[in-house]
Length: 273
Length: 273
Image: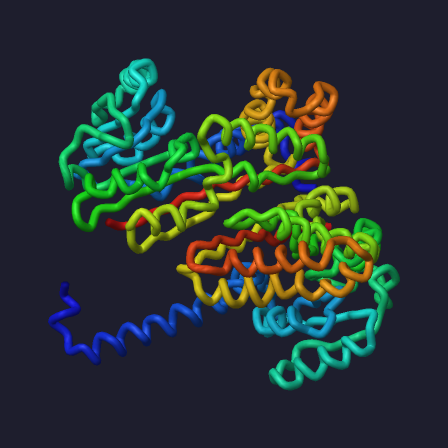
């Protein structure tokens, strides 16, 4: 009602500005959801084990500008890309080292904190990796682990082919020696590796059409695109017929329509040495 | 280290007291998780549509002691139990009325707020129930809906028979004209029924052995007991063999062991008329 008393332009612009802000807020939602409670004190020495191409490194370094971060990856090519990304962002508190997470080139108690994000899901023996990391922590140091869990995905409308398509992704990751259902296992993994005071905090992403940036940024461009990406391999291995696969992918995109809903949960664990 | 400098008894008692407090905190967790952000102003008139035996009525009335709550259910027997519960708790701001949610005995704009909890899951046409409720709200009034979603359950260790047992529960609820996967659908249901400004907030219950009261109170005594309860009906209808069923139930209890994890999500939606 009150809007009618405002000049039309003013209202439209005001609304657009608020709308843009809301969209930008939502685009930041995922990063905030996963990382906003990780801040390391100035002067602390932090190991990022498995930095890949540096997507999380940028966030980590920005959240803890005074920490000295050492980011390690097994792949020289990934490290080169990560280094380039950090340079472009003008970040100066990160150094990179090549290394294998099962045999890192650091002495005992080299770090105050360890950060591991989207790494364990790719390892055949994630518990052993955690066991190897433990001695690198100083007494009283903490480890933070973040992983997704593809078995936490559910949606509306429900669809059997979509469910089968996701199961194919889980199966392929398993065949590659990984575990796409690892998120829910962080508690037993960390306690089993000898860490104490393990606290797991699930971070659920809930998407409906009132959250348009998440519809685009998560349901379509993150999750469904990731499933869609393994289509050729699914076909090659004959895990699903092409028709059923295409129905499954279409059903996942269908959840991004105005009456659709998509749910996914990441798990974040912290523990002490 | 420091504990050694304390007299042993003092430490043990201190620890036990903290431990008791922690357990009590966790027992309150589920109620807080679902209800703690629902407070209606003094003098406001609130309809609880489908109060059953009054489990939520007690919480609702305590959270909004100044509101005048009208709790309705179709079953006289349930109403009698609800009334008795409220009397025992010394709650005085609730009156009970018998009525059918599809045809309630109230005029238009009778209420400032409507509250619906664990009701829609039992209805064959939940959208029509919401459409019928809408006119009872005053302009600017709000509706709050809380529902579970059995498809949101996942756990570690994963188990096929446990999964099938849960699917049996979903199927039986469907055969009875309900929908055990309704939680995720609150956004399309409320928008489809004509409510505006629909906001859905998922409330995930995450249980591992660091949260012993939830292991007992949720994994075992709430979820697994509920699945176990339909065992005779599952057997009668031949939905699963007795052996597979028993393996499934055992696998659900297995998730309550020290290295187990159980996840379940409730959905809470609020909307305006």
